[in-house]
Length: 285
Image 1: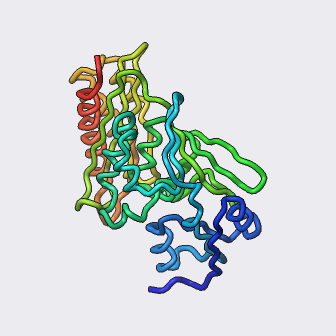
Image 2: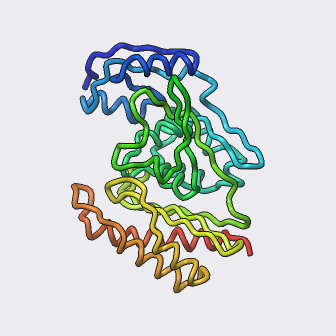
């Protein structure tokens, strides 16, 4: 397959890239290309212009301060996977990235590219929702910050509008003593998830729980009933089972060629329970 015709631009500054996107509502940014290039080849998208971001070094990197961490949107997935500070404070990112594609795709794929694409079975959107991340989206005339809950709208759809570009992801410091867990079921390693769960828990204060499942058809889905079950049950084994049941009850997958809806619904609960057990085991206190 060959892509449809398009103009190609490779700016070296963020301002130039934003100007190109502002001038052409049909332009599409190119990050790692792991999502956009297949869509071009299958003619699922037909942009007038592809704006290559790979020469804009300012969009990559990981910075940590007392308030948390900022990950540049063009940070390669392999660099985030190997970053000691992320492994230490936000290990959920490493856990999930180990399931993303293969070494070759992680070498090119970017954190921001995966989030902006928002594949309904992708791991990173679920992780960012579980971590209460915030996204910085810029355009030629300014910037805005969007919570993960508002950023991921539906399958392949985010809150980004024409002329805007995801430039950074902000991670708040995790709750004291937080434990994190991730579980996924895929047909083969590296495939998109049939079902996956990302969980963050902490005993600090009144307690903290975030339960997110993905692979159900519309992207990452937070499960408040499962969170309440973990907190009310003081993170015990019965609470884990209740949280898994709540996850199964909350999702509404559809039948597709990969799995029937009843199966996805069931394994959503199984993955939630596995991830919760793992997170609780890693929790301090």
